[in-house]
Amino acid sequence: MSEFVFKMPDLGEGTVDAEIVAWHAKPGDAVTEDQLIVEVMTDKAAVEVPAPVSGRVVSITGGPGDKVAVGSPLIVFEVGESPAATVPATPPATVGPATIAPAAAAPARVAPAAAATTPPAVAAPAESPAGRQGRVMASPANRRRAREAGIDLTTVVGSGPGGRILRGDVTAAGAATARTDSPSETTEIKVIGLRRLIAERMSEAKRNIPHFAYVEEVDVTELESLRHHLNSSRPTDAASLSYLPLVVMALIRVLESFPQCNALYDAARGVVVRHRAVHVGIATQTPDGLKVPVVRHAESLGLWQVAAQIRQLAERARSNKATRDELVGSTITVTSLGKLGGIASTPIINAPEVAIIGLNKAIERPVVHQGSIAVRRIMNLSSSFDHRFVDGYDAAAMIQALKELLEHPAMIFIPKARPQ
Image (tube, rainbow, N blue to C red):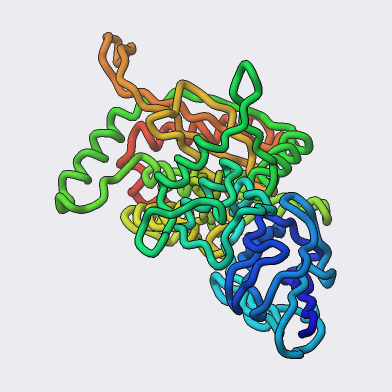
């Protein structure tokens, strides 16, 4: 018998350490090669790390929320044969759209971080004396539910085929193990992984960016009429067109006149980088937290192409299948709360961008229209701008230009007249 020391691998792009999100093995467990042993997170991605060898776990380093430096011992195995004593932390051997494979180790499965984030919000406890050995069979969604509830899945008896843990098993385990603080029941959730990253980035954005908020009322009656007409012309089984693609198309036209809003601030160099291409981030709520998939080169796409990309990217983000490249590189972000949109909001800028546009709920209400009281469909646009680089006048002028296009939607699709 010999010991095999597996070190924290180099996950690329200048990573110096990684945060432990959840352990799936503990001292004394027997594991097989390629079995998931730990989930870690860098500022770039969430990574599922499999066992590089088969053996018994002797010791692990750190618990959920702790950071382990690249090259430091992560887990020690007792193995029957005598492989190399350690797995060195070397740069990734291969990088694919959803995989990072450390050299001399089994490939680590990667779920990219959203323009800002990706991993599970909360880790399950690392220790479980009564836990069973071997790989736990559960879907990613049920693993996430267990982490959020602080449930060690190795202690849960699955009722599915072959002992697979189902949602009801997780719910039952949560009810049985909920900690009670008399006279009220409370649940403690450690802030790690995605939720920690969201907290850090939101705090940094609010702390460092002087937000200028601007809210404008938009009459979207004609836009709704166009949307309804376009949807009625589609096959009955086709996905319905929402306001979002139409707003993105209008935004693309507006940014031609307001390039200072389609920009990124490079704080390290003290430079604002304006982009001709429009890479629109679509803020998307997922079971794991907020992610921002990106519609790249939206200026080169038609309405239906934009709509299709928004749907596809949002679904990939929600199912944790989006690649890192699909979650970074936006130059301006659009956010919508859909039916929960409320009257107004104050969206936080997705740094290093300098502007974000928010859609609020569209409702019918009586307004004065062409000198008479009429029922019109009204929606507020809530926007935030980095006041260091976008003057208040320019911010207001941009939203007014966007309002004009949305209230006269045919103009969105009419080519802009060029000077003679």
